[in-house]
Every structure is written in C-alpha cells, then in structure tokens.
Image 1: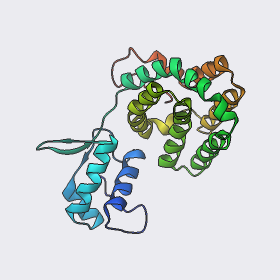
Image 2: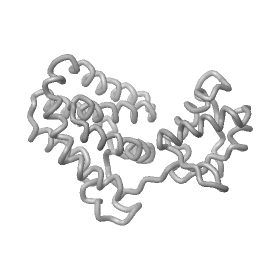
Image 3: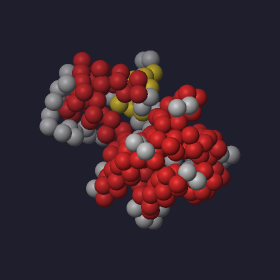
Image 4: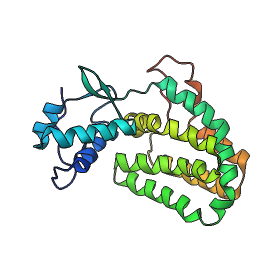
Length: 228
C-alpha cells in the first residue's frame, strides 16, 4: 500500500521543499528501502506539479537515496545487512586511525563541534526525531574522517555514508532496549577520542556495533547489524 505523503513543514511547491518532505519520509522509514516513489501518487498527495517533484527526485538520486529504473520509476535504494556488516568490519580498523589523526584538532578548535554532535543526538532522540538523530549520528562519525586530513579515509567515508544512512532509517529504533544508550555510547567514544586513546576508541567502537561484525558472513537480510 502506498504511503500518503504529507508536508513536513509549511506547504511549499519548491523543489527544495518537496525534496525535504520526501527525504524525511525515506529516513524515518515511512517509505522503506525498495519502496517505490510514484510520481502521480506523490503529486496528488502534495498538490504539486510533476516539475518540482522530478527535480526533488533527481536531488535524492544524486544523494544516493533513490535509484531510477528506466520504464519502472524511482525506488528507495536497498542496503543489505551484509553490506553494512562489511562496512563495519573495515570501520573498526580505520576509524580509530582517523580518530588518532584528528586528535589534535579535536582537543583544540574542533572540540565544541564534536561535543555538539553528541548534544544534537541527545536532543533528537528525546524528541524521537529519527531524521535528525540519523544526521547527528553520522555527523559524529564523519567528523573523525573530515578532521583526519587523510584523503583516502575521507573517500572511504563518503562512499559509506549513504548506505549507513539508509540502514539507520530502518534500524534506528532498534539499537537497544533503551535507545538513549546510543547517546551514552557516543559520549564514551567522544571521551576516549579527546584523550587520544586509540586502543580505547577501538574497543568502544567494537562495542558500538558488535552484532554487525558477526553478521558480515550472514545472508542478506539476516543478522542485521545493531549499530552503524
């Protein structure tokens, strides 16, 4: 059954407004991976023409959230448990290195930025704002790669981020029995990163997605990673 699309903000017919509405529907799991975004259906729900809708879908495609299949339409990109588990297995090895390279910046001018991402995550989780919590979660981890000054590490993260974002849109509500544990885990990661303790960072990161590492040989759709 197709989801009924509704404006997430004051109604606007601009491509940017349509993009934000569709993006929110994807990231809160309303339109699941593999789900079709039917132009006629969306245009009728939002009371818009096809032109801004198509621009919005193109932007989502460029972001990696949507794939357009000729003669079939636009679909939300699917990400398997295996893909995320494989990403996690590599991250466990390279993210501590990114944190090590970024330690000087994190203890200096970037410290407020790191702490702010944790606070943003806390506020989003308290409001049950899934898209905002996903954004804060990924900004936290991306910061280590951005501040590392290492081009290969940055390219790796750029290649992973959309897949992780889509995985989180499905799994974000099932991190643990207490979703606020996610905030505590990021506080611990931030603390050891600021201390410059690479080994402790690696241990905290492994605890952050333990099931993901065990799932890397699972069949797609089985053994879904707990975290990303």
